[in-house]
Image 1 (cartoon, helix red, strand yellow):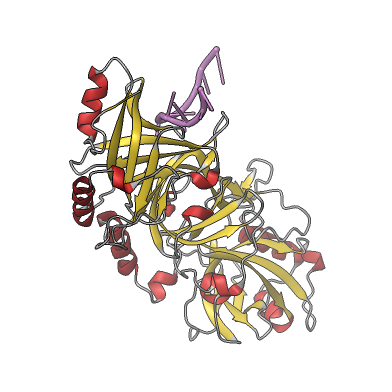
Image 2 (tube, chains in turn red, cyan):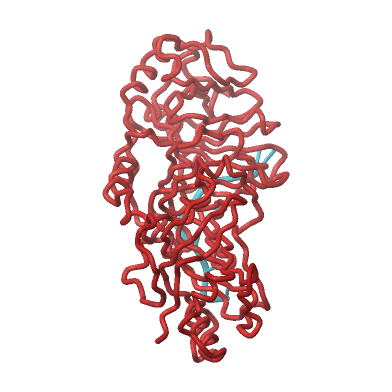
Length: 451
DNA sequence: TTAGGGTTTG
């Protein structure tokens, strides 16, 4: 195969033009900044594959497909816009799409973090075995380094880009968000925790409440310890996103902003669960990217006091409950979960998504006896007890079991035409919740309105 | 070789 200009790095534009003209396959050296990439995965052939898009010093973009024997030999993109050098690369066409193909037999690559080595452009953080920096004209490398230091990535907005508050609007979507945590939840299963400061919409639930089912607290099995949860934001929803690929080698420090392109979602027991697709692409964004700044500004406007603690979706608040004291501070359920103090009572706006026992005739509020309520807000879901004196107070104005049943149905969003509506939509209520020294939650100072 | 893709009413 013919190599064009050995040692020289060609511009993308030049390589495309030359490959168009040439009748025989030609190899090129290319260099640029990686702006988007797929997760590493097994190809349908014998190799592992990762695709990426890079931009060169003239602003041209090109996709590259990298095939290697081992998943560990694929490029690792660990920061926003690393510098990529590709040598002995073939340009191929598929329909109207043109892309670079990395062949493990004769191609090589190297990745540099220009921000980490501004003064040393010859030390890659990762290189394929065949890579030799001395085979490339260093003046070309320097020009790409210079370009990288001034490059400002700007996310192109399109109709697929949504915020978490728009979740469910389309089956496939893009998300611009901050990664707050990554957890390995099985051999090949990873969970990504992402946040953009907005509240995911409340979901409808199955009307058919299984007997005394307190519902799941997480959309998929994944237990996080309190120290991890304490690093999560307390306002806005943190979406759990399931990934069936090893995302560990791209794992960033907490707080990295990303654009996830082409993902989807599922729902489980009224909880959102995002899902990465084999075609999902990731873009690391610098903290000063304009769309990121817009996101942060919206968060600042929401404020962090009382207003910021009220679910975006709870206005107007139906008057189903009253509280007997307004002296407790407003909090989200995540405020409560991550609370460092031993004991505290707060005011929350939540939905009652389940109750155990379901049968009101089994309700008993003697001493420590009571019921378990499953409460959620845009930030979390918890089990809270309602017992003893607080339980008595909650139902103080509700005398008969028939009335109690009607009020509980109202609270759980069960429609009176039971057989016609398969879903229920619990209304928002205000309540007080106490966290005790054993980290149990209980509802208190709250009363159902008898009407 | 593999992937490629903004996605299916047959």
